Length: 255
Image (tube, rainbow, N blue to C red; front, side, top):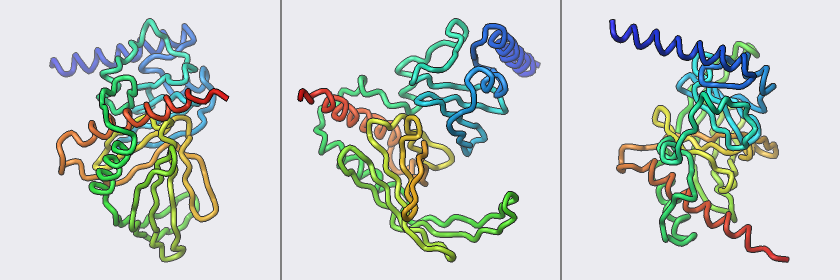
């Protein structure tokens, strides 16, 4: 009985907040996707997460929906029409727990080179290098796509960019692919279903297939989180520390 009462209270709270948001012309947790489109317009990109949620990007900011209702947001670009008096701002400590990079909270004294090497060691150690992807049938094109193998995944730093490269063993079209992610644009590191997901600000990551390139905001790969304690938290801390070097370096130019 108590569980039913709590569930009813949560639904009532979301519904009340949704009505409040509509009347105030601002967004709260519980706002519908229709309300968001009305107030924010069409998102620049929509990413469907493995857990069933959807993430809508508006510049450097993003909104996450569950069952069509606003569940979380990141107003990094300060362009979201959020009802501040209704939705509490997430504290830096809580954001860090959720995998958001917080350069100002990093206390490490490691050098830039040592930090890069530590990150590469962990990524190359715990990322599954060879992955088989099952084939699927597309109801949109009416085409049956065969399975394929991802081989020889490697990570490296080129200047201020993390570069991921791998070979695709596709029966129809064997080729190479890569992702390029500027470190200062890395926003969040989180895990979902045994996958490590790197999220960038405002679709600033580049996915290259052959000679074709497109802007994306996520890269995901199978990752062994069980082999080392707190590995995700330590990666977040390491990347946060690394971002401090690029931000400080950009301020030194005096010409």
